Image (cartoon, rainbow, N blue to C red; front, side, top):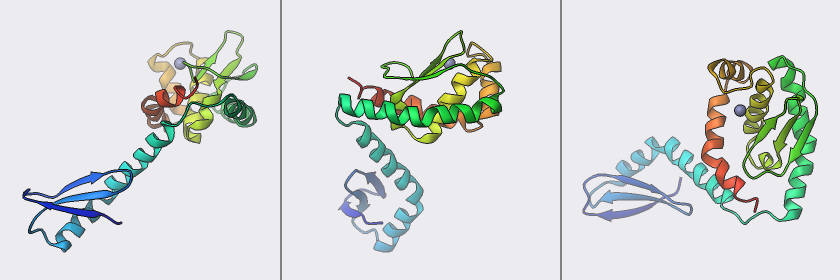
Length: 180
Ligand SMILES: [Zn+2]
């Protein structure tokens, strides 16, 4: 792991992760070995931070063109129905049609006729997020609310749900905003 050392009159070691570089702020007399150990012990944290910066950078991109949006719709039509078919028996429900939409506010929805629809922008999220949204909507075919019983069903079918739902809450808005 490469990093830049900036020495000053400070008393303790400090760490700053930027997109282009990792900066270690160090006291004048800190040894290289000391600094190196410090970096090593923060390795996981640094990597997590770099990944997060990378994700933010990707999502702060230009608005999607019509062409790009249409490509996402096609990709979603190829991919998402298969995920729905995979999870429906796990959740234990039957469903109607699966449609893909270009939506600005929702990731997925379901109707009284048991039809499901999903936002094509899901294709810009990790596959685990797509699965979490698919399971969420399928569980609404059992429980038309966000009660404890509903989340119990969701987590039974997809134990990692909370992690990926959190990802979507943290990163979803930036992705939605690319659909102008
Ligand atoms: Zn819901």
